[in-house]
Length: 52
Image (cartoon, rainbow, N blue to C red):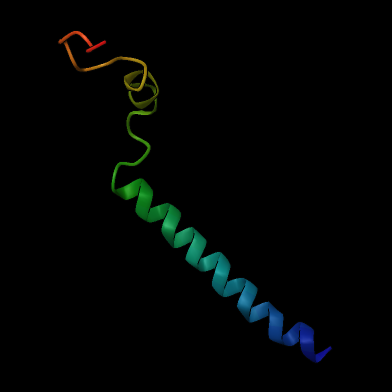
């Protein structure tokens, strides 16, 4: 039973840290342009030809 009382605060602390990290990512615009990032990786920004 004492292990349970020891693990509950640790679980709550880790959950609060995870929630804080998620909210920080929302407020800093990490999820603003999901489609743009997915499409940007497909296109090459270089217009010069590749060397053989």
